[in-house]
Image (cartoon, rainbow, N blue to C red; front, side, top):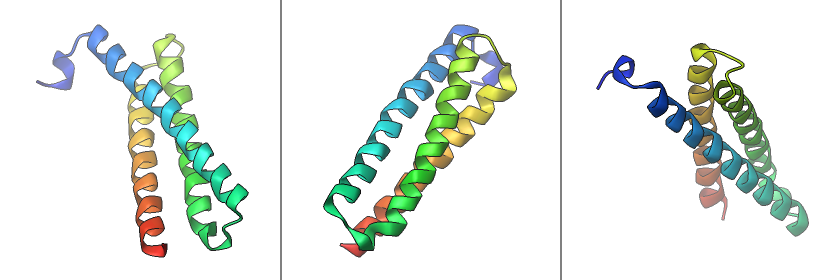
Length: 103
């Protein structure tokens, strides 16, 4: 199925999932950053920074998805939101790998 064969309803559903996923992962990043701060883990500084960048990616993705769902911006922003969401997922993966290697 080509991306041009999808209906507007299917695209909105996918963008809705990106929006919901961005909110959930943003919350998870903030929770983990807070836990590192409370536990005062000095050696987890790099992981903390990567998760901060991930939070930024998920915030931007969430905002672009929201604007697309409300009809404020066009298809270009939907594509950018999807790409930024995937970059955020990869950055969380990197943080997880460093966390596993460190502990």
